[in-house]
Length: 95
Length: 95
Image (cartoon, each protein chain N blue to C red):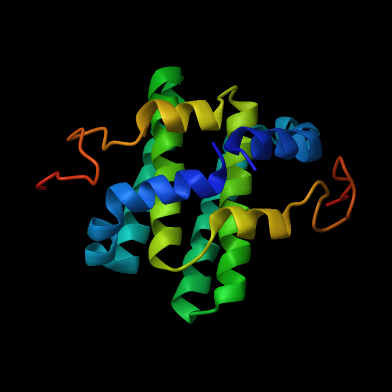
């Protein structure tokens, strides 16, 4: 599934709730999910980690929806088959 | 671009660096990018926000690469055209 299609699915499922909650509240949910991802990784629980990865990208897409940003377009404008800093693939940045 | 293809692009660009840095260091970078996303959103800077959204999904894909998780598969197993909690589209959860 395209990143854009995933974001649109999140819009269909959650836009009404996301827009009521607002940008700050939705961002705070994203932060919570990022914390839960670490807990799952630290426990070495692969199934839980998969669910938390899913939640992080889902909340990131929700946040993009209510801030009017196309996540796929943003991602590919910065990362397009080369490192945005050194312009190499693979990245050859020294720091 | 499919979520999976984006993850593979991140693998080509950064896997050698991500795997040297390790899971904890890569997770910490993700957390920093999430913080920078908030700074850009708070400033209302759309161009900066787009770049930070790009960085968050990029570091999430890097973290998925070094933890052996397929981000697209994980996302679609949990979110597949209905809310995983209430099974409705749009979501009808009451809490």
